[in-house]
Length: 162
Length: 287
Image (cartoon, rainbow over all chains, first blue to last red; front, side, top):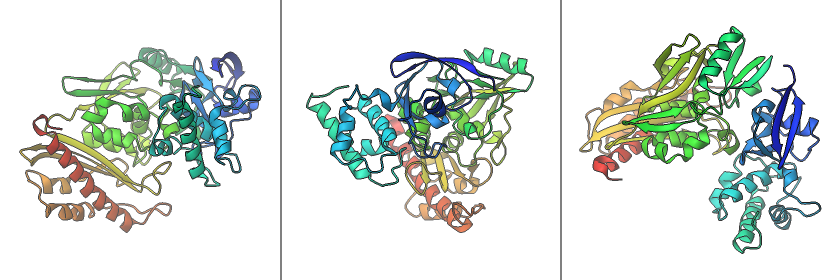
């Protein structure tokens, strides 16, 4: 397929790319735009390692044709930290030991981030549902669940909100 | 050689017409994207016409590009077509449900697609428009040409929406599936039912199970056991037994034929009972 020009908002900035329209958003992000935080696991929508937000909703970047993002907002893991300061959700992952090999972590964090944006006081069941599309082959789900609940607690105490 | 995001249905049909069979319509494309994509694509996912969800005069109209996530969240679908909301909530993963569409679930023609199974139980019909401007309305179960093959030609036809009667007073529906995990797993068997009661007597019943045939399949003989019956505890084992008589195929990857028949029986009983109880609860406006 011939390359097409696609305009979209990436992590709050308008970008224009010239790319293969039926290539995946994942390969656009990693290959062309150099954003390596989003991981490629299975490449077929089964593992969630490539989770990014498309208009605030978590999606598998490996299943999105690049042309589909025209005019939309894409948010990747890179947008969460500010300089050397990581997001309080990421802090919770560190504090609760929710990172083992780390490969699923960016996707997990993006699914959890989308949850906390929509629901600042999730129940453990809601957390499990929110990360149900993200596989952790180290099987450290319990700590991940604790980390997300811990981050929600920080919001509840009014110390953090975005 | 192009990927076009259509601005409305007419434009999408015009592009199909101009491409003379080369272009194909896509919506979420979560299944198609894993195969080789056709060179010309028309994306319907964001169209106003295909993303509406509304009820008019007791008829529910669901745009073909309504995502599984939107359908599962919709209060209208949850209250008027519980089976569909339940089915949509179990498809794939949250990420897939945010992109995958109900029309795609039908057009992809997988034999046990959860939303399609619920739609057939609800009695849904697809409104299909072709490039000649002709519109036809066909029952969802009639849209299967074989395993994973739809009768819909995506180079010349578009499912605009799906239509069915909403569940009124005295009606209930339910969907259940059995899968190895609660997320990211295809079902070994799924089943859906719609029941209408009057004074606790069953007046109408639709029971669908899959995978039985290429299309979601109604189990007419099992339905007949409940027709004009006030079900007591003795009826449900008979229902399960009758449903488990259905001929199914075993699968090397998923489960044996015997196990699948057992699951069809068990799920049929449970889903009918649930739909019946909901119908009774909804009788006379009670909830």
